[in-house]
Image (cartoon, rainbow, N blue to C red; front, side, top):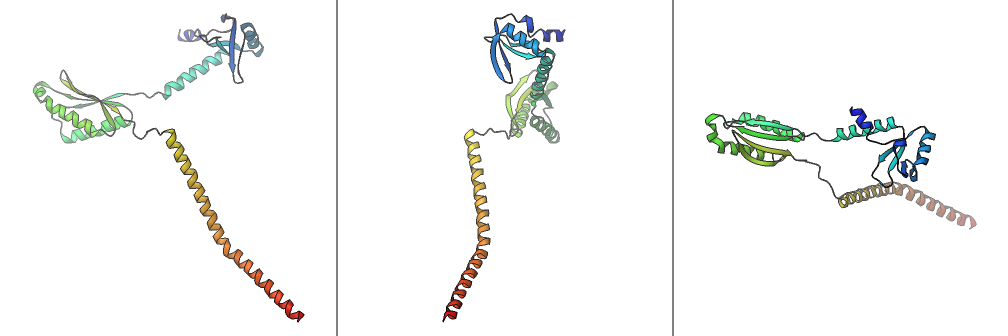
Length: 236
């Protein structure tokens, strides 16, 4: 039944009864009479599939209908996989929770929040322990304060029957979005640093070669002077 319903979502071929349609594909789009679009589909051995009936004119694709349904199903599956599933994890306290137990539950709550889950912490008052509700509120406020780096309070402690609840949501730490201006500035700084590094490397190479070149030029000049003096002496 689900498959039939999915297949009936789109009109195909002769089910499309408008005067003209817009055909979209990898090469672009064009508006043609519906009869011409059907002829094109038949020539290519595919179907004329209406993908956007509310457009003017309706938008269609030339594609095998089974392949089209497969692509749609695959795309929906990928989108569903990208969605972050947030779970609500519960942490239970008693009004007389000792320090060791508190630290143990604090550690787990921190892990839950870092994984992207919400935390619902509550103090359960059994019998006459309801008289210590202020103590339970203090406990939950301490709990929220100890988790402030990874969680934010969605709801302050509130008493519901024999339970006092505190709700925490995860903070998205380390994902501060940079402005385009900041990104451009960092890119320019990186280019400038690279240019400075290359210039320094070039200067070092010139300094290394300079004595050798200077020595060769000096030797050449000395040889030329000696040859000239020798020539003058011979003429004398």
